[in-house]
Length: 154
Length: 421
Image (cartoon, rainbow over all chains, first blue to last red; front, side):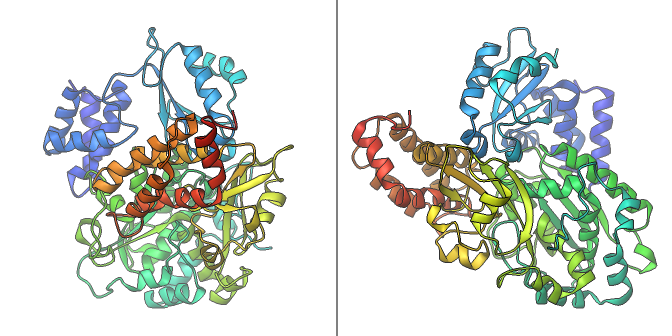
């Protein structure tokens, strides 16, 4: 069920565009901001508010890397695994993260605190290896820095 | 050395409207609205020799010239700020560091093609840039630089920021338009080109961020000045970048035609101690490899093409001699395989194959015939065989890698292991 705040956010996005379907991505992001992910139910309701077929909005939702169609943890860690990060130690960093959190890529820790996902180039190549945690960039990450970094996300 | 694009970027933060105006900001907009006909602006940009900085290098003025000025349909201008090419981060610096420059660039460029609507298509991962742009757009509306009857000139332009949700193909001109309309972001067939039928069927120009940011400076200082910024035939400055095992990864605005050696050795501080440069992607992940023999090559559109690669985004990704080129290619092809939109079969099916073969070779499980198979994929995924430039971009580094690092591939297969491990 969409909350009144979510419906309001989607309606506002819809107003910004001459064609309501153009607000699709923003609507999905509004839902995700409130719920952390986009459930089938929420997606169907968002499609209704936008007046577009559910399957079409789902086609949009599933295309994008950053729209989550499964529940995620309180904090989402996106690990850049593209070339510039790879060249300067992304693999050992990723391995250390998996070990530290006790999960494989795509999984969420049992306490629901972290979800770990690989992601394409974050455009932070000068601060490689880079992560995106809860949407904010973190650069120059090393396995040694991980404990300090993760502590900031209770 | 003049650095018009980055002159106002300071480490202590982003310029607000007053700060931007104090540096002469919005002067170009005032000038075109008061003194220049739209066609004159386009002609000036054409004369300047400005070529697209997003990768393709097409003449910007010529692209604008395809817009029908007498059309009844409202025209659109779109800034492609979906920077997602691995190794490339130059546009982020411009957007975060000087957002009003982007806004003014949209207004001046929009005026040249008589656009009614402008959009900045920004990738979701650039949240600091989104915040900077939102503020700048608000400030520009308040000051009358956007909206109805801009500065009393009778010209109207509405500018809207769209943040995407992460997908490399959105940087492809026509896929970007599909995305902006709210469809699944698949590329479209050309023709018709966006200039005839783009966003919602309206005449549309899509330009890269760095390309557009050059325009106010060209208007302020003229075409000849812009030509003079460069060391070679291709005009202007260029934001070059360097990443990989260099001492100071970063991006710098330098004269077009600066050599790779200057970028890597002077600006990036050379390779890290104990490392030597062996190869490089001169302009991001989709550009064919050059080697250490090409260090003195002037990095402009013509010279890099002659050497068998593309200037692309001008973002050098450096391969050192202690890193396995097969592993690097496996990484690159995984990116392209994952980011294929799946619309056309060669790309959807072929790229995962290249990744799988490269992974097998890298693990020491390569087989006789793998290299021929990879070469075959390079041909079948090359230019003209797929719907858009995604797959040809993907096999550019692969084909050149097979040529320059042949012995490394053969050693993997012969020794049944990765010699770098």
